[in-house]
Each structure stands twice: as structure tokens, then as C-alpha cells.
Image (cartoon, rainbow, N blue to C red; front, side, top):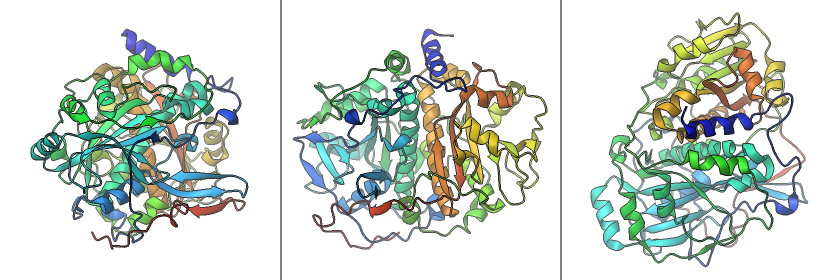
Length: 556
């Protein structure tokens, strides 16, 4: 095992929860040092984006098709896109305290992910080509740097199907403040959440998104200006960039000369605000980060295979796409006894299968590695029990051999022909087990079903490098956002669960504690029990008096 891979495996081991104790964490919440959830660039020119009040006619089912007419790039379309992908969805208030929610999910609602827009396409005179930071609280773009006009023209000529790129970074401190050493995992989940959120929002406008695989972390930091002197401001770690455009996925896959772009960004503006007056230091994360640095390399694009067709089942899902995105919430409690239909369950699992031709996995160029361990509690026509959705044929044999628990059936489920769903434990009530494994959280057992996401760490890191530990969590996060939206389409709710007892999940299947297969993320889907003590306000109620909404209809 290489030194860097050993360091990554050691981080993963040290940040496991168990019945005997939790991963190193603060143990309490120091509210005086709570990080500001909104990064701002003091002194940077701010360009307000319109608040589009009309609703698109795109249906939720349309998001899984590729023939939506692309919208032209302008301030209205860009504003709508960023709002749906990363903007505020609501405010919750007790009367004494208020907090915002966003369209993209985040562990603990702490939002470590920062989003930058690198534009080389023409918008208007107020948004010249350049690098911008998206400020969700003010729904505005902060101009960080300008792109030389000749470089913008060259990029548009070389890449006519693209308009720019989204660049993502993480402020680890936002998650460290609450979760300590395990925070790095949650930051990577949130990158995946954000990527999927960006892909679904792009679909409403007929746009496409494709991750860059050749870009290294040092290059990305240079493009984003993260390698500059930040003074006392909390640093951001570069994560990933994705090309945004109107062309097919293979057209957007043409790689960008990122070094050239970084050199052509000039007139840097703005200083990042400090998010907390005090900080705690978590050496577990700082020690492993060098091992997780992604090099600039000629990665092979490994497009996932096409999944079984879901067109027939999708045709019966008619909710408006914007409405599904805007209503996404994390359920805090589930209503025991409320289940789901087999049709909705099968559609959800079908969409979880990787496909290079369908959102959200057409954004993700790596071979699928995450498989779903499903705890079925109340799904019509399906016995309760433990199931496995095998998302990768190539990994199924190794997964079966690695699961050494006695009595696992691995029986194909007759009710879902064509879907690689296997019954492991049939006819057994798993509600108590699911709740116990998810840190005794009732939402994992009171739901219609819950699941754990298993991935082969060694297999992927041996093939792609130690940095690929991060991309496994991205894949899990992409699945998480899909599950959130699918739950909403079925009139249910979802919740991502980052707290679970790692090795006790492995014990359930007979997996070796430090073996290849590791649990990376949990999720639950059911009927939410609303907290009537809270009042909900619209996401941008604080801006409606200050900014004229944009009323032009959006067509599709």
C-alpha cells in the first residue's frame, strides 16, 4: 500500500463512529465561534441578479430527457440558474432566531461549499467575462477578476458549445466547527450535492454540465484565486470544476487549458471576510490533505454505462421541476407507518443507476463505484428486509465475496425485473437495526426505507490515485441529491445521514472493518412530520423591497 493511500485509509479509520465512541469532535457547540454561512469579498464589485418570479413549464420528468430547448445566456437565465442550483430556498424562524435553507443540501446546514462562475461567454456590459463569486444571501455575483477580452474570444471560438465553468471549493472550518475530524467527509458529500444540484438546475434551462477530469488542485486554486494571501480569512480548498454549456456531454468533455485561463485573469478585486473570530485545529484533516491532492493528469474518461430505461415510469411523474427543486428540505422527523408504492420505489432505484445519457450522472465521468444497501420498511408489494442495489456489474462479484455474513440470500427481486436489486435478508423487520446503525436516529427506521452507500476504497484508489477518496464521496453526494428530489416527486421527504456506526454497518454484512468495502453515507426516505413551532419565510423575502423582480416568462 502506497504511503499516500495509507494516510487516507488511516484518516478514514480514525474518523469512524462506533457504539463505543464517536470520532474526535468538539463535544459541544461554541456558539461564539459559529462560522458565518456567507462568504463575501469586501471591496469586490457586486452585480445583482434578477429574481425571476415566473415559473418554468419544464416538468420534473423532462429533467431526465436531453431535448429541452436551451435558453440564451443572459442575466435573467444566469440568475435563475444560480438561484435554483445554490440559492436560498427558505428561512425558518422561531420568532427569536432565524436561519436560511438552500436548494443544495448540506451536512448540518453548514454549507462549506463555495461556488465561483468563470465566464467567457457574453452576458452584458455589467457582467464582462471573468471570475465571479456567487453570493447566495444577496443573490449577486462578486467580481473577483476580469478575463482578458482576447482570451474570452479565443475560448468562445475553441469551445463554442460552452459559456463558462463552475468552480467549487470548500471551507472546511464550517463543518469542523460542529463535527471535528469527520468534517472532511461531509465537505466532500456537499461537493457531490452541489454538483447534482447544478446539473438539475441546468436541465431546466436546457443547459448541460460536465466535470473536468484533467484539472489538478493547484491549477484550480490558481484559476479561483485561492493561492493568494488571504490574511486572517479562513482558507478555501479547491474541489472541482465543471464546464457549463448548451452542447451535448461529449462536446463539453473537450478539456480546457486551465493554466492559460489562470494567466489571463487580471485586475483581481476583493478581500474575503473572516467567518469566525476563533478557531479549533483538527490535525486529522490537515495531515491527510496533502495525500488527497489531485494532480493534473491525463485521466481516462470512464463514462458509466447506460442504465435500464426508466421512460415509462417517468412519464407518470408530472410535477413542475422548479417546484420540486424549490421545495427540497431535509426531514427532521418521519411519520411512522407511512410508506411508499412499489412504482415510486422502483423509479427511484432505476434513476440511481448510472447512465451517461441522463441526469445527474451524465455530469460524472468516473466509473460507478457506490452500491446501495437498502433497508426496506414499508414499500407496498415488497417484503421488509435488507436489499442490495448493485450499481456496478464490474464490482458485484467482489462485493458478494467480501460479504461474509451467514445466510445472505443474494436473491434477485422478482417484483423489479431488469433492475439489479438483490434480497439479502427477506421478511425481517429492519427498523430498529436501521435506527441503531444511524447513530440511534429514529428517522432511519420510521421511514418507508433507508439506505447505506458502500464503496470499494482500495479498488478505486489503486486505479485512480489516493485523491479519488474524495470523488467517492462526491458520487455519494450526487446520489443524495437525486434521492432528495425523487422523494419530493413522490410526495415524500428525504434526509441525508452522515452520522452512522461505520464498522457495525460492515458487521451486518460480514465485511472486514478495514477491508476494501466501506460505508460512506446513509439516507432515509419517508413522510416528514412537520415542526409546527417554526414559521417559514421565502428565501429572498429580505430582498423583495430592494430589488425589482424579473417577470419575463420563462419558456422551454
